[in-house]
Image 1: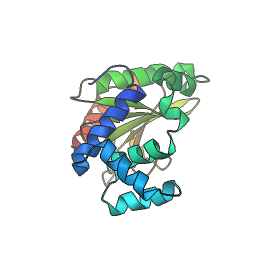
Image 2: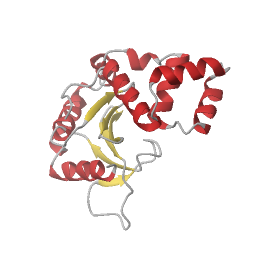
Image 3: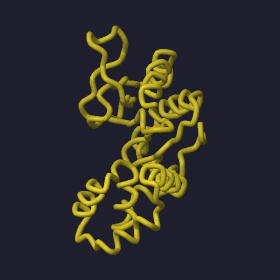
Image 4: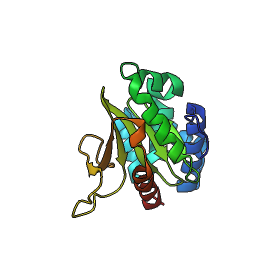
Length: 193
């Protein structure tokens, strides 16, 4: 794992700059100069232009944020974001900690803290999210297709975690973060490589 603590915004930004360089062969300053020449009127116009240039995903988000500003959640301290997520559900915080410990057993995993969830990233992309969905449960969203027929496990369809995470495991206590969760987490990690 890159770090057992959530990655600070500056480290995430550097990672995204590296992704931009890998994806396009050109660095941040090159792209920002081209964007200044283009002078897009809004974020949508910039996104559309970047798509035509073949810049998508994290590199596109980086360039949009560098041009039009970062959301408040990206520059807030990771600890502050996590504290806010669990402010009214502190009994669920040990679930996040247990999932992060499991993720630490995988190679080259990063942690990205957002306003509503914590994302786990592998070398290629986000493979899981940990979201305190209600005051009584945490959803571990996984970037895997739900096997058909559904396995006789705790893996269930997810509809509220976004299209990238069609499967989830509902967790209500840290004791549920067990070998089954570890296996599905590893499966999601492997599937994104």
